[in-house]
Length: 259
Image (cartoon, rainbow, N blue to C red; front, side):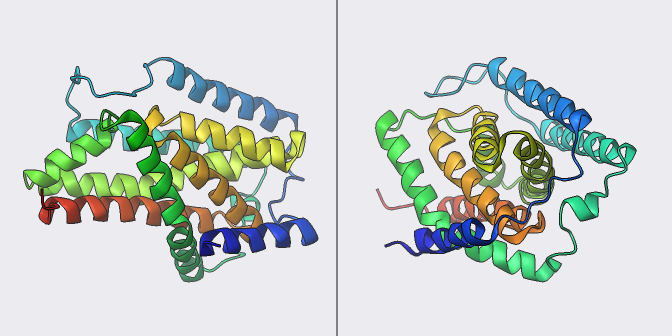
């Protein structure tokens, strides 16, 4: 049996026997309304552009300014959620379990958990690529990274690294796991909330080619959050996953496979 399945299976067993560590007692009706508002906002973003399945000529080329604007917009959303919690007199540090795990411990734990689940993610990605038979369209941000790294645009590569390894994991984990998952768990239970938030997280990336791997990742992130009780662990997992992907792309660009 793959080690990733064993590890996450034991984590699930611990959660089943002793209960999850994600607290929901501070959330109420206002948070439920905010949760539905955020979910609707992300759903509109999913429905607005067509889901990318096969390669087509891009209408616009992603630029460094677009990456920075996206990072700034993500931070604004995070600040709105944090501000809402403070208005509700809910401590973000307590709710997100920031004191349950040390920073270094969370980083090492997250990296090890991603290493355990990474083969399953790669298998899911390769399976989708085989289904689309090489016609799967990469996300614009991935195309941007390949072009920037291939042409040695160091500032653009650095900006994307910051976005992918720091900003995106922090914002997405706090919003999807730290807030939405916890809020909907308090209302509908952990399983229903896991399914809903994992599906929303996967779909919001607007790419069918990576949907299964993102769904597996989202489930793993939620399990890790319930097991640890600290949002720092899924943040570290998310950052490690994105960092590994970018590192593999850089390695492939520098050492392309033989034809």
